[in-house]
Image 1: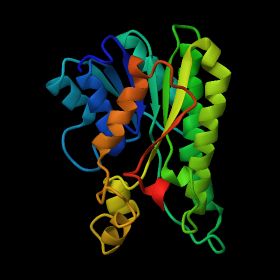
Image 2 (image 1 turned 180 degrees about the vertical axis):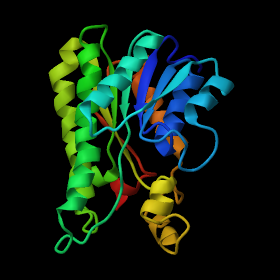
Image 3 (image 1 turned 135 degrees about the horizontal axis):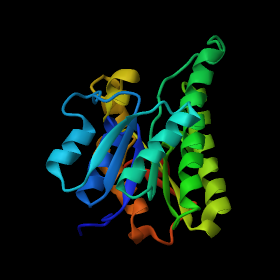
Image 4 (image 1 turned 180 degrees about the horizontal axis):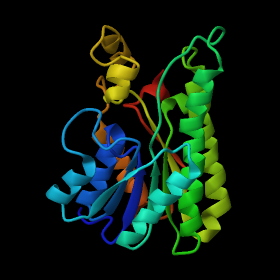
Length: 257
């Protein structure tokens, strides 16, 4: 099925790399113009910038906007950039960080940084996007949470806290703005092979990878494209009656462990 998002415009935070890059490309392949909103233009994994790939490989249009998701005005500017393509229809709050901590000995900086980016960024991004959607024809907001937003892990207290907050924020926003035609849903990825899991918290490519895969019924790591497929569904009319929902993309791990 093609052209699921034809004549639509999406803003994707953290769209330069990882899951955000895959989502941006998947949207463009389905006819969606994309605002790649990120603090950096070059992909962390290397290669051509996402917006340039969209312009060269698809029929969609794209632009890059430097965006710090901890700054509300920055997100307003990113949403405003969608006006070039007819205005925002889809907001993907993807930008986030992943790190562990020593709960009893770390200072507040780890907690503050994680909450600022992972929670405040989604809050600000949702507000900026929904402000436009309620004055238009509605839209779809897709928030990236994590399986860590469904179950606790003692090495990642702040991260789990942040992703649990994203989950409940999603449900609250779906309740508040459903009458305005705005759908809000969350994706909960498991072990996805990005620089977050190869560099930030090394799992993929380490001795821990095989043991982790043993907890996944499908016995493989997820790929950014696995997340992008769900983000595509949630943004499209195929999910027209889906709101306030969590979709888990983890190969069956959280349902069986």
